[in-house]
Image 1 (cartoon, one colour):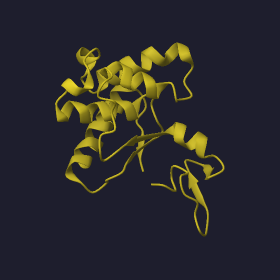
Image 2 (cartoon, helix red, strand yellow):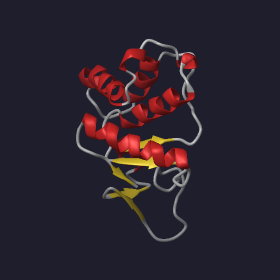
Image 3 (tube, one colour):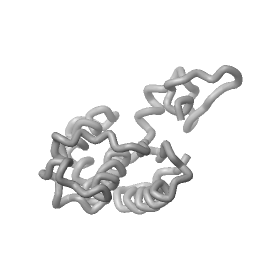
Image 4 (cartoon, helix red, strand yellow):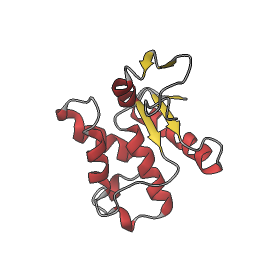
Length: 142
């Protein structure tokens, strides 16, 4: 995972992600990835919408499309009605869906998980794929 995101350098050989050389193109690659972490790293004091808004601003989307991307991601994970709720008020399942929404906004080229073998990650990957199909072209799992 650290090689894919450019946080570590390969000690031998080369690393290419989605056609980009690492770590030279790591900034571009990170903009193409949607990462769903094993542990929640949501800001519980912010609202659901604010959590997504922070991350969508790191993307390469034009500013005029930020709100649309957030709305699309919330709808895809069935949290549109909870946009103004603080994260601390969400159930564990809703928080997991919010992490998926964050990874899918804006539509990444690839979905990565930090714990690919866990049952919750397999469920998340299925939800992730379903959510991205609702949003637009499906992302690849890597």
